[in-house]
Length: 114
Length: 112
Picture (tube, each protein chain N blue to C red):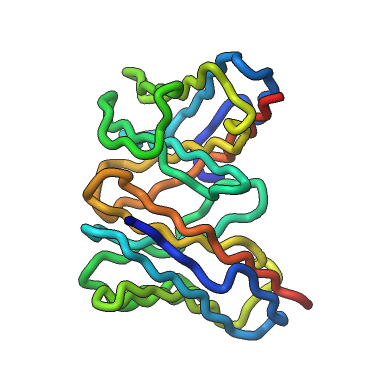
């Protein structure tokens, strides 16, 4: 158990809908990262927040957005969902934004778009 | 283009044997390289993190090497165990955009 929690575990929804994935980092961790893992593209970095502020952006679509709240939990919002958005979404956390900082991954949220 | 390529795609070995997984990257500018182990359906778990100046790093039976000149890394697993069956993912961190570049992984299966 990494100490990172994600909810829900599974989510099934329809195309065009909007969903929110939630992540609680390990106690004391200030950085939160979001990743998408699909069968055909592997793991992809989406976005990073550090202490409430956006720190880095990866392959995140404009239909997706995220935020980190004052209590350091984070939410990833996915809108206008398409079939191709079906994937495992992982959240990870680390204490700081160090170059060599270790990230601890949560168990993931499996999103299925029908 | 920033890319991370891993080989082989999959590997089957017998319990107790050693194996080596390869990672070649074209990511620039380079910040660090990480190896993760991912069991099916679970989040990745960090094995090693190597910066530019580090050549070798060990974590138990896992030893990672890095050659920053040739942009190659390897992960050596010694005396494999059934629990080593998983996907092993190489990730390069860059200080440019698209901060983390992931390889597609090597799927390792250890047989009794």
